[in-house]
Every structure is written in C-alpha cells, then in structure tokens.
Amino acid sequence: MSISSTRPLSLPPLRNLLVVGGGGREQALAWALRRCPEVGKIWISPGNAGTVNLQGCDSLEVAEGDHEGLIRECRTHNIDLVVIGPEAPLAAGLADKLRREGTAVFGPGAEGAQLEASKAWAKQLMKEAGVPTADHWTVTSEEEGLAVVQQLRRPLVVKADGLAAGKGVTVADTVDETTAAIHDAFEGRFGSAGEQLVLEERLCGPEVSVFALCDGEQMVLLPPAQDHKRLNDGDHGPNTGGMGAYAPAPLLDQEGLEQVRKLVMEPTLEALRNRGIQYRGVIYAGLMLTKEGPRVIEFNCRFGDPECQTLMPLMGPELARILQACALGRLAEAPPLTPIELCSACVVSAADGYPDAPRKGDPIEISLNVDQSEYQQLQLFHAGTRHTFDGVLETAGGRVLAMVAQATDFDQAFTKAYEGLTQVRYEGMQFRKDIGHQVRAPKLS
Ligand code: AMP
Ligand code: GLY
Image (cartoon, rainbow, N blue to C red):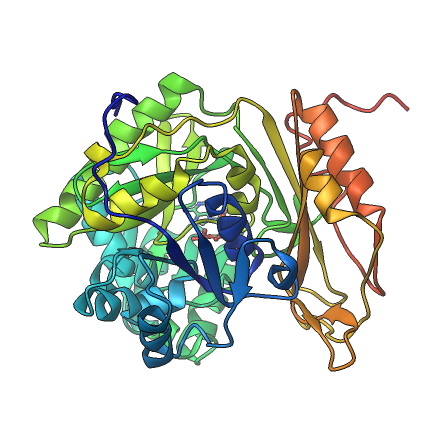
C-alpha cells in the first residue's frame, strides 16, 4: 500500500507503549519503537538483563502469563499501545482481554493466534483460501497415522498440532522414522500439543520468512529475512529456535515478494476475515521456495526470533505509528513504511548444552560499548540473560544474545557482527560461524 506522507496524522496520541515478553525479539521491538519521536516511554514486561539499560525503556516485573497484572500496569501507566511479542500469551487470549479493557493491541486474539497454535487449523484455513502449501493429513490416533504411512509408503514430515516450543516437527528421511515419530507423539512426547498430528509431504527448497503487519483488512510487508534453524555450521545438528538471520534476503526480490503477497498473505487475511476474525498483528509466513513456487511451511502469529532482531534496525521511525494503526484497524492512516536500505546481519550466541539442556548461570563478560555500538550500526540484543543479586550478568536461557550489524553489503555487515561477538565471553558460548553464507563472498583460504 502507498499512502501519502504529507497526509496529516489523525491517529490518537502515542506516548506510552508496553512491549510484552522477555526475549531478544522483544528487546529489538522496544529498541526500534523508541525511535518514534512522539513516543515518550516504553515499558517492557518482563524484559531481560539487556532491557534494564535501554534508554527510554523501563522494565516491569510482570510475567507474560499474568494477564491481570498486565492489565493493571496498562491502567497505571496510561498505555496507548501494547505490542505482544511471544505466541503463548497471544494463544492464551491476552490481546482479547486487553481489547475488552479498551487498550489498543498489536497482536491477534486467541482465535487468530490459532494460525500458529494449531497446525491443523492453519492447514484447513490454507486449504479453504487456496494458499499453496504441502499436502497433508490430520490424524488423531497412532492407527490413523500409520494407515496414512502404509498407504503412501514414503517418508513424511510429522508435526504436533499444538505449540511445542519449536520442537514439534520431525522431518523424517525414511518410512521407519516417520512411523517412530508418530508413535512417540502419541506416547505423549509433546504432551497435549501432540494429541493431534499433521502429516505432511516433504518439500524441498530454500526457506525464507515473510512478515505482514495487518490491521484486519490491509497489510504492509517487511523485507524478507532468512533464518538458520540448525545448530551447527553447514546446516547440521538439531533444529533450534534460530541461530542467526539476515535481511533483506535476495531469495525474494520485489516481484517475488509481491507474488507472496498475492498468493499467500492476502488470501490468508481474507480467509481469517471470512471466519469473522479481525487479525490485527503480524502474520509470519515461513515459506519454502520450491521449484513449483512458494509454499507455506508454517504460519506464526508473532515476529520471528531472530528475524525480528535482524529487521528492527532497518525500520524507520514510523514503525510505532504503523503498529498503532494496525492495532486500531486504521492502517490507511499510517505513514508509509520506509525501510533503511542497508544489509542487516544477525548472529545468535547460545548457552552450553543448547538446545537440549542449556546450562544457566555462566557469568557473561561484555567489553563492547553498547551506546557507541548503536551509533556504529551494531546492536547487542539480550535474550537468556539475567543479573544475579550482586549484579553479575549471567546466562539464563538457551539463546543468550544476538549481535546484529548493518552495512552497505552483507560481507561488511557480517564482519561487524562477528567482530562484535569477539567482545563477548562466557563458558560454553556456541555460535555458528557461517551465518549468511548464502549472501557472503566465499573465503579464499
Ligand atoms: P516448523 O516448526 O513447522 O517451521 O518446521 C521446522 C522446520 O522443519 C522448518 O523450518 C523446515 O526446515 C522443516 N519442515 C517443516 N515442514 C516441512 C515440509 N513440509 N517439508 C520439508 N521440510 C519441512
Ligand atoms: N526463527 C523462527 C521462529 O521464530 O519461529
């Protein structure tokens, strides 16, 4: 959409914002929303050790699951807009509750959040809307699942229907692996999230993440980003939440992005509307670019992590107004999105033992001057970090922090991000050395 930037701003005042969540994604959102000159103060709840020192931002000690506590904080601080980061509070209906209180919220209600919270629901919606995706079978018992495998006699992708913290998918290489994954899920491996499974045809091609900021009717697309899901270099090792990203991903040029808008994003938003759902938040489409064209691998009802940390430094100061306009169903009144034309590179550093059993409590030393680094287009976003009672910064989760840098090309951006990481130390620190290999010049050695 293109809207004249000379149009007088008719949106209500936007002084106090609340970002819900405590990951790197939420720190990056708070960091970017602060850039809007009208925004006075940003609250983040609960935030992390990195948000404590973020200028213009204060942390609140209310957990993302404490809906009543968050509603109280909105009243206390006269919050004009709430931006909900993670999927769990969205799926649990936090946005619905806040809206009932009259608060503007960027984030779908529980019904819309099913796009992520139920893979079977999302697949049905895609089918109705004619959105290209892998063929699938929804099954509710092991017998039913095995019958599908027996009939097809080829390996399938096995997905737990519900939220499984990014661990609910098995991309099976053999029929035996498919059968074992079905068996494990019905044995309770994913708890109630695995009581229903989606079995999918296995697709092939590079993956790209596309984000649409929606007001229920209209949308604005962000530049595409590419995530790196596997733990180790060369895309080996277990799946993770994401070990690094870059944007804009050249995998989708302007024409490709427009194709995704027409084939995927607009029909999805329309199908949501047809179900009576006013989706005011971000639709995150995880796409696979197959030989036959783009196919949806999954939908999420939130920003990607670490794609968000990668994209936020490319956003102009109008972002806060755009999210507000989405929250109010008035995107036509928002200023146009003007992404900064630089390449953004993000490298995630994880804790020892991530993703299976991340160790907590390792002291972290950071010798980077963060204020200085922002100026140099280098950002350090925390995630699994905390301060001990005596003020020592230590690891507190699987993905510990993300180093993000921008430059005029990806080689320079990644060089800066990796140099930034040399100024961070903790026991067992692990990060991939090859993030962005798709867009970096090969090293001559
Ligand atoms: P998801 O949690 O649905 O994003 O799946 C995790 C990862 O599994 C994706 O990023 C893909 O790499 C892979 N995957 C999911 N569905 C498929 C599919 N139908 N074909 C091939 N790979 C898939
Ligand atoms: N980076 C993948 C995700 O946020 O699900």
